[in-house]
Length: 52
View 1: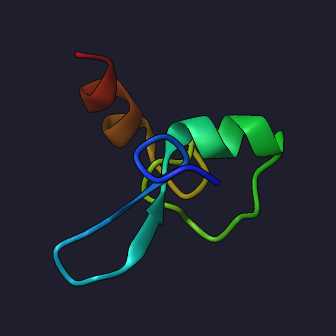
View 2: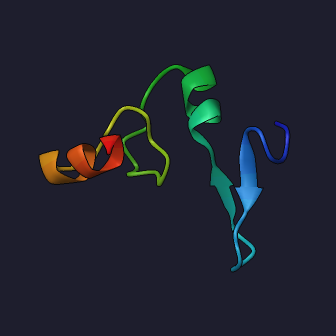
């Protein structure tokens, strides 16, 4: 995994997986990840606002 491409470290020191990482993995883990490209756990309003 490459920092900046597959993950970044947030202000709290936590590793956050990117959309690129999730797409490389190829499936949704159903944990509600922040950058999930599979829209797990998001409602229609969230999805519409991201597309703007």
